[in-house]
Length: 330
View: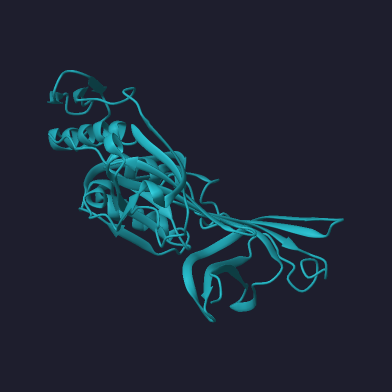
């Protein structure tokens, strides 16, 4: 019986499919983030035949795609599609003759993270704002969540990346960029999904679990006076054992309540975390949920915040998890 093997295939795109290779890759890493960072890959490649200086010579801004393949008993199949990436770092050195490649799923060859824009929206929605931002880069938008109405919002000398990420977070959404696509998804909807698998202690090579009272709250107090209407919103949600003070700008009482609820739950999110390494690779992606069983006080439902795949002689898969806490609503 042929042992199970994993390999990486990388395709180079310029004006369409150009070259595909799977050999000469000595080390490869792919990190899949739920939010906060762009998915990224890095690779160390053998350059003994000078291919990375001539045949496969990459340029900054080139588009590449990566796939992890699985082979067992003479049958090879796709294990994981890592997506499309933009090359942002290239290194060549000798001797030994090697090359290094770094790439991100975000459009780093554009103004996505660099140009500070000024723009305002009136009587709009979160989805419309995201659609307008995505249009600046001709990127598709995937929006998964409730329709959020916004009376007024201004982008004041902020990059599109930081502006959209913070606006999404304000209303309980997360933003990520995957395979040259902007994705906004609602935390509460994703945390409510059923676990995709159950893992027990024997599934792990190593693990580390931590829970903290710091930055966790049982309730929140909101107080803000709207400068235009002169109206003051003052209320408390949850219980008073540990209270989070909130005073962010809001256009209405409903808007203030939504902002407060999401800020409170965002503060509680990630107070219980786990870092772990799996014995065997699993088809598991960031933003999915898993169930831990047989860990005693650690048992429960966890959100997959980050997955890192590392190949180089062996396949190592590490996870960053955060326990899904009971939401506090207004």
